Length: 220
Image 1 (cartoon, helix red, strand yellow):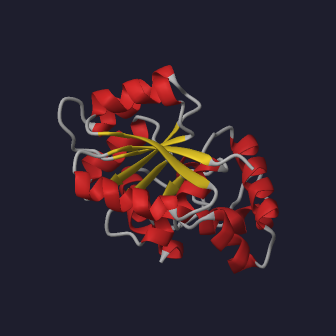
Image 2 (cartoon, rainbow, N blue to C red):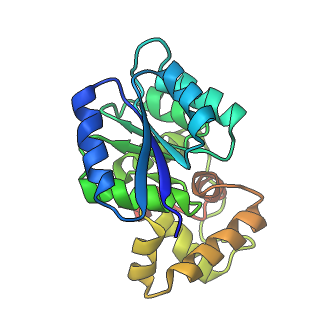
């Protein structure tokens, strides 16, 4: 089985070494390169063709958000996971606008990093629960929800999955919560995206909140 190829973009060598050590323990992953700034990250992505770039935000020469924009413009199939010490809304929303697939704080445990990498490489968009809540709360404050209790074109089963996805948990965790197979969860999300004409969990959740299908108190 082909390994997940990972490029580390982080200017602190000690952090890079620690992250690499965690990843290299996994038999299905390999670190194919390391970049010390955003410019290097863009160049090395073109050279090494990684499946995912683990990107710090604050780096010299070119920051992680600008590097993400360039990588996604040139190499759209490469996924980006922001791994940062910052949970500021400015950085979160700028990263999402740059098309990062995930946002994880450096306070996360090693196993959370590993599960997030696998989730992103299987097509998921992953936000750490505390980050997901910031996104939802900001969106909720800026919109006027529609009629509560309605679910539009979605079935009850699809809504059950979407409500849990809104908490920022992985497909595997959703499957465990609902006693389903992970493939079933993926299938329901895929159908949800198609029905709502969106391409990610975040877009689907925002759409549902705007329509009043999901309320803020359900996300506790």
